[in-house]
Length: 393
Image 1 (cartoon, helix red, strand yellow):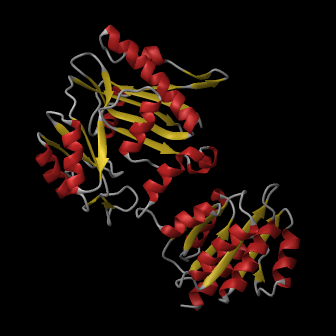
Image 2 (cartoon, rainbow, N blue to C red):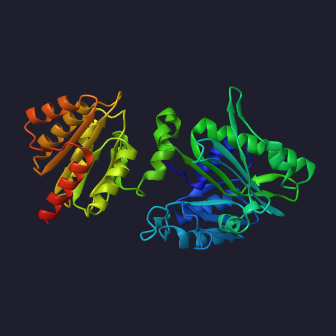
């Protein structure tokens, strides 16, 4: 879950970081009233989208009066800016963030991210923050200082002071920078964040460090540990994401519609990706991605199977399940049987069950009146599903 800027900043403030004063608005006149109440001499008006190219697309502008804020907001609200998940469609601007335009002398970069190579947290910092830092860092490898963090019983530990020294700041600001790095690490750990980023972190004329922009991405699979973020999740996902994917997520299933004819029911992200690759290798096209989580009940699985059966493009169903200690094959079979009864749709089904209760799963599916052909292994299952789909088009 990637939060909007105003949400990320709210959480930064909870962790003691300094942010510009401001408020969001969803209508032009509301934006005018907000600016009047804030009373700044200069305002920043920022479209609340998750696109990284917001500045270049005119999603960040400045105004010197409430009337200017209203006029600027009118050009943004209801417009579409490029979205990270669907660039072709864009992301609808539902809010603008109106805040004080903070003067500064230097733009810095600070982030704590999950290192996919090691599975640990990584501190990133640079004296050269601002737009295009990733592309600039690709050309200048030393531009961003990278330091792995260690998780201890007392919290995250790392080279916070060294990272602050590398910024070459006045003593007061250097001390504050080290404290900011430490707080970002604590925040990433507490919130199960994949990314906590401030860009730019600016140095003001009074030698204070202020987070002008922020990005925060939370691990979706850890959200059950953070019920307090549910309101943030609702705001992020409303009207922006596929409602089927959102509903599937609430049923403990990762689901995404694709464009092919072979509907897949798979447990485990790795097995799902391998299944997609094999379908492509055999010349087929998957109709969806699916990863049934170990926490899914039979009714949750039934919901996911209904999505597959309800997809009009699906002409063949491929069940590729490996039961483990937390998710038995028969639980998945029960969910599929429920979905078939509910939808009444009959498709050619190839099933491959392996692992915990594999034989029982086949018996259970047959006894429920679901017709399917059982495959001996994964290769056999995928090949047969692709052949069936080819003859059904």
